[in-house]
Image (tube, rainbow, N blue to C red; front, top):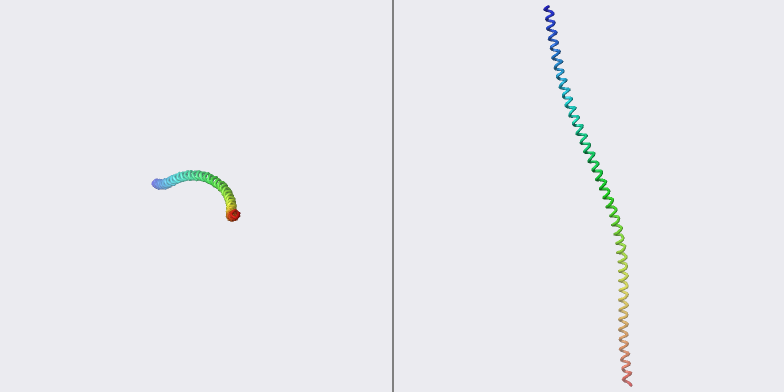
Length: 145
């Protein structure tokens, strides 16, 4: 009996040690599961933050695309206006060249008119001299009679 009691005590002690080991392993497992759950929650939070960040990035890209399209439209309008201005400047330059040519023609005509006027003045002066000379001759002719 004693032997049976010793064996029972020894078996109970082994069972008690096994239970303690199982409890320690179970506590360790619970801790690991809790840590895994915490990490999973953090991972879910990070995924949600990442989803939000990508949504913000997508929205920013759409806004930038719209702005780039607006800039392209304004750039096209500027290019069109520049072409119109270039055509106007070319037209103005052509008119200025025509005006310059007309001014040169008027200037040449004025020079010719001045030369003609000087010739007429010289002719008039000669005519006046001739008329005076004729008057003197006529005056001599009258005194001789």
